[in-house]
Image (tube, rainbow, N blue to C red; front, side, top):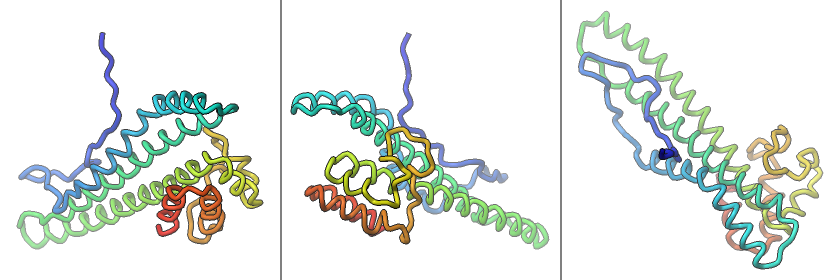
Length: 217
């Protein structure tokens, strides 16, 4: 008996309107967005392998006390998959909004007016749904970068000495505490000051570039 694993899923629509000609196609498929979302999703299935690989590398260089760090690596991969899933849902809602805006067949003025009212309500709801999932994507992306930076011991010290994140208790891997998942916002000093300082303290250009992207966002 063989086992089948699904690493990523994209369905492209919640419930598209059906016309006499069938389901209308979106005017802009945005395949690049779908491809990016699918690549992000696929990372969730690589968490265990990444954890095992990290364990071997840490042992090789003689690092001890790495249990939480291995869990962090697995958590990061799972979070990446979640980001891809949220982006896929945002894309699907946006694609359905395009479908609802497709011109209706000419069946008289009264029908056209009724169809327009129904179309407007559906498009508005779908756009709000897409925005909702995009906000979730942004929050998850920022928290993903935060957890990547926390993998560096020197950077983690800078983050955890910030009194504003004391209630996060070090952002333990797998935490379900609300304070361990701070809201991503331009007003949050964690994102605008503490995280850039932590990345700079690490001495790694790659971390500084990663945090720079979040700061730009």
